[in-house]
Image (cartoon, rainbow, N blue to C red):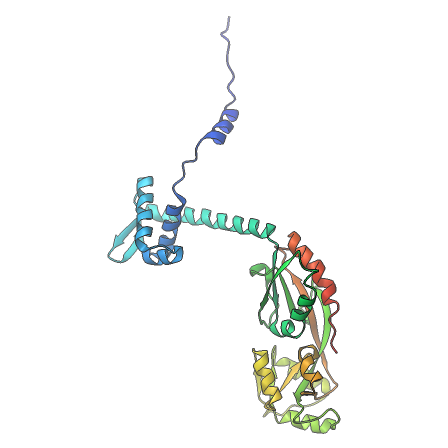
Length: 319
């Protein structure tokens, strides 16, 4: 008669052991101290990053070595180098901490109600800030962290800290996934102290030819305008880019420069009679768009913000 046999389910035992067995992990503070020390090759710089003293960092690293029963760092005077074991261990620790950081950031972002919105300064100052303030009650479920960031290029949201952006996007860069809410035409403007609206076209063009020609985006906008207007610009004209819109506007208002820009950006100056449009001929270069980050577009707070902003931006008009 064959003896009775007992079947052992090793998979279930493994699961139970995994569930109840204490993890054999080194102290997290010691890992952080070692990783920072390895990255900076310095106890002092690691301490500055972690907001502790270099003595505390060194103690954590020594405790980690004692816990592992293995040498990780070598200290010769002020110089710190990694042992071969230290280099191999640091590569794994850095990978694990980086993954933990990324997972934590994604989780925090997924539940956060804060939506980070990047806006070109002049658009924010001229229109959006006031509209957001007026519509604050409707946006009560979404907290906007408004950041005015000037950029001549389309912002790469998926490689930035922003969830949404309002940008002027040139025609050649517009795509079907952008929420374009305003196509605009650029015109050249000069100070009203030089010419008036009822002056002849010849007088306006003469005033233009005596000024420096300023642009916020590309010099080619001036070239395109001259071509559209059927004019040949003088080779003596001076062009320069002004990244600070307010300083650039000051140069125009004081009669030192001309600016080619969309009328939406100079509405206040036009209402106040401070600027004069040189010509009714303009160039269609693009429009303002609401851009949504692909990595954040599934977040409820971002979806709420887009639903709130789209009808608001649709009311944007150029007077």
